[in-house]
Amino acid sequence: MRSMTSWGIAILLAAGMTTGELRAEVYGIEQAVSAFQLPSNGPARPGIHSGKVISVKLLAGPQAGVPFVIWCDSQRLRGRGGGGPRDGAEYRAEAPTSNGDVMAIDAFTKDGRSGTLHIAGMPYDLADGRLFLISTQDATPRVLQVQCELTELKGIRGGPVQTRAQRIAKFAEQNETVRKFWTDSAKP
Image: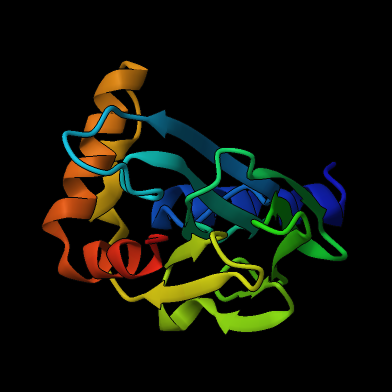
């Protein structure tokens, strides 16, 4: 004779298998990092010719996760994260600014569907844009939150380092918002 608990689990498993809705709960982060350095025909522009792009997905529960991308002109940007059922998922990163201060980046989700990112103490709702351009050329970091499909950035992940760097630079040159941000951030 089966106990009520095992019948309940069997029913849930059967329901999940027929509806396709059964998902494991996962907590933590997925992260892909691309540091890049390219030669330039003219003046090298940090963010276009050198920097780091970090693609992060915050995972909390059975949801697909909350993805975002940090694109920084500093190759010294470092990040890590984790999570659990009680607290959700978090990501923490830091990068030095031009005057030697450390800029903090913190992201959090409790439900795996929505989230908040703080850069140098300023909050950003991930629903308002998932691409973050960060210039560390000044004492106070410049940040631009960009609303774009992250699928546009898929080509900058994977493959040889030189190829990734070229794809990053090409995306920066072709996307007017990104190009203008890095051009305006460049030191004269």
